[in-house]
Amino acid sequence: MRQDASVDIAVIPISEEVEDQLGAYLDYQSGVGRGRAYVFAGNDLFLEASANQPNAGDAVEFDWHTRDPSVLSAIVAIQVGSAPQFTIIDLGASDTFGDRSLIGTVPTGLSGLTIEVEAFALDSIKGTVSSSVQELTFL
Image: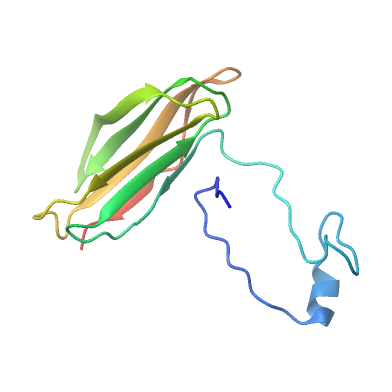
């Protein structure tokens, strides 16, 4: 299952009494819709990192997802340590599904460093869009 949001969602088993009080759009007392929640809005560009606290030697993957296929998109370091900057890490077209990925191995010597990254893309409706910021702290 593909996650398109940069938020963590926990699935917690709850009692039937509590579930009946929560409710959700198309929530049925029995059947396939029971206990489901639906999200109808989100960011125009989603960025997700496979690890937020990687160690040296770990593989880290960044995935970002746009509304449109084959659009120009980039992932950018916007802060390294306490120094703000705008350093393009990757620039290219998203695939036919609007997705783009970058994977790399964390080198040694980054322990204690924090980097903030953000994705940018061209959107057919809104022009230039940006994702939420992902922070990586190297252990």
